[in-house]
Image 1 (cartoon, rainbow, N blue to C red):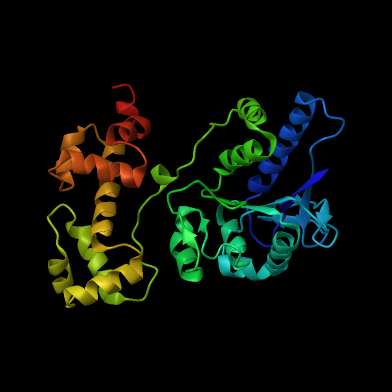
Image 2 (tube, one colour):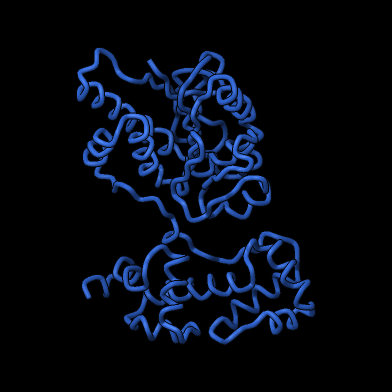
Length: 330
């Protein structure tokens, strides 16, 4: 019998992100056994703690591990539950998990799946250096700073690279669990689990959920000033020379420092600010797509639609119908 480990991290976590995958894998395990008329389930499933002591979250919810890292000598799939709060402290508190995950991968060829900000524990192992990885969009900047050797895929809800899986948002863990269930139990079992749980199937992008508020977790003050300049003037035609001049930098130095500080080029940053402004207008007003386009400084409809889809995952009309109640049935 194969084995699945769902880790129970110390410190802060979202209890649903531990319980939901556990229950979904149990459902899939049971259905797969019935479907294939097996004498025993395909997997045994454990909630694995650093030790066997109960772990309490938010001073309200307690989870009792069914196994410890010491007792699990071999596992086939490790679900790396998310940590929350101070992520650097969370990594330190759970260093024993980091070492155990690395050993299980190297020695036993275990497959790994990080949920949301569990990507920080995964990245800490060094196993995703040079590989693709996803995490929650609110942690993208910190993740890039801490793990520059990892290829962060910011728009993905689900990412896979050679038996190492990762996911984006907190409650997208339901979609991620379905993805893993399909991978390990087959599509028929995954579809059944989707229908029983009433969870949308095959959702793989978190672009439409990202709220762009500017990447300002850096110490380059002239670049922060440039970001504010863009955010205050995005409706107008902007160019690198004008923005650089406003913060007293030459264009070449400005481009280099801007990319280093924000992980975006100035053009990308301008586009993201414009798209975020468009999203807010589409959510709250009854303006037409063209009116919104002109409001944010676009004159080329094709370019606007292409840029909007690039950063939101939807067309402007799709986004408006989904998030603006007044426009939902137009």
